[in-house]
Every structure is written in C-alpha cells, then in structure tokens.
Amino acid sequence: MGLFKRNPFGHILFLKKWLIRIFGAMTHRRYRGFNELLIEGSEIITTLPDRGVLFISNHQTYFADVVAMFHVFNASLSGRQDTIKNIGYLWNPKLNIYYVAAKETMREGLLPRILSYVGAITVERTWREKGKDVKREVNLKDTENIKIALEDGWVITFPQGTTKSFKPVRKGTAHIIKQHRPVVVPIVIDGFRRSFDKKGLRLKKKGILQSFIIKEPLEIDYDNDTIEEIVEKVEYAIEQHASFLKVIPPEIRKEQEELNKERKWEY
Image (cartoon, rainbow, N blue to C red):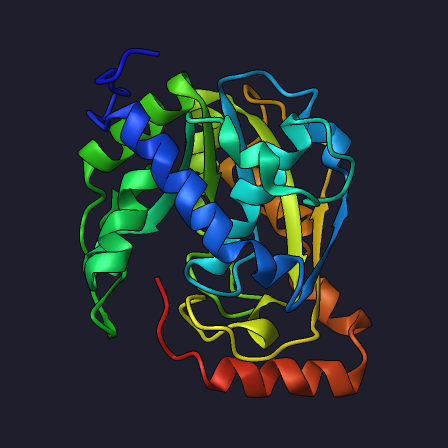
C-alpha cells in the first residue's frame, strides 16, 4: 500500500490504518476486560464479499456500537471465532469499512472529528437538528456518498436513526437497499447502554455482559418487495418491530422505558 494512497473520500489509508490501530487498542478492554462481549455468528463475516455489504443494527450509543463492530469484523476476518481475544487483528485492519452518522454529531468536538476520519459517511438528518424537529429534503450528495461507500466496501447503518428502542425504521434505509441491492446483514446488540454513557465514549459501569449477534443476510426481492415490506423485514431482523414489545418481560420493558427517558436526543 502506497504511503499516500487514498480511498474514494480522499482519506489517506496509511493514516486511517494507524487511527484504527490506536483507537482499537485504547478501547479493547471496554469489550474484553472491564466488560465482556458475547459474540454469535462471526463465521458469517468470513463468507461476505469484500464490497457491497450493508450492515443494519439497532442502536444504543453514538460511538460504542460502531467501535465494537470494527473490533468484531476485524477479529472475525483474522480467523477468531466469536471472540476478540488478542488484539493482533488490529495490525492489518479492513480499511474499507464505513458507517453512517449524523453530520452534526461528527462535528461536536475533536474526538468525533478524528473518529469521522476512520470511516464516517456524514449525512444531514431530514427530520431532526440540534434537538428540534425539522423537515428538509434529502441531500442527494449524502445518498451518493453511501453508494460510493457500498461500491468500495462495507457500510454500517442504524436504520432507526436513534438510540431509543422500538422506534420505527426510517424508509431511507429501505430505499438504499432497493436501489443499490447490497447484501444486507442484520446485527442485534444489547448491553451497550448499560455499559456506556449515551455518547459511548465514557465507561459508565463495569461487569456488564454485552451481546453482539450477527444474523444471516436478509432474503430480499429487490425487484418486487415494496419499501414498506423491506422496512418491516428490517424491523424484524434487528428485533425492533413493535411485536417484540409483547415478549419482553415487564421488568425489562420498564427498565428500557426509563433508559429511553434519559435519551431525548436522537438522529
């Protein structure tokens, strides 16, 4: 790899590699040490193509979720089965991993700006800005950037657009799936909002078992499935469909409701 080789967004890959190594080493004990990360389905990662993969997941913190995915994906590609033991996998990380994030979030301070360089595809929210409801047209440049990222590698997105549980999946994700036809891989996470503060930067509690379940790619008929049908498939796949509320024990549902009250900010 040339010293100044860049990705399609102009980021220097040599610098990106070192940022992943450094931040990966700094955060590793948050998932294996202070807390533990229970992983299922890492063998699926090794079967995926190098490009054109869209990961969809529920969302619990702004950054800890994404950081965990970088750890799990790279550990899996390095031959580790459902574990991130031994951070040697960070030495040669996959550099064409991107994640979708709100533009205003990635501008809030130096650390988010640095993390943005690691692989953020920043988008303008069409419904929310600075804690207030807004209504604006979709920025076509944002959708074009997601297309470019899918053509170059893997993209992580949180289709609910919020860290609150059981919020509806936004149709924008379904449009991306139908238009660009990626391999869609669902991920279901838990325990992160108990481990971290809402930004996912500060460790809030130790001894939490975090779970990270990777599911088989969704079966989607890109030609015939409607946007509404794709939205419903996504909601079921990431276990955020309203029907899941009925099977959650009352005490856990009450805990989730209390946690959601603490998280009035969404993107």
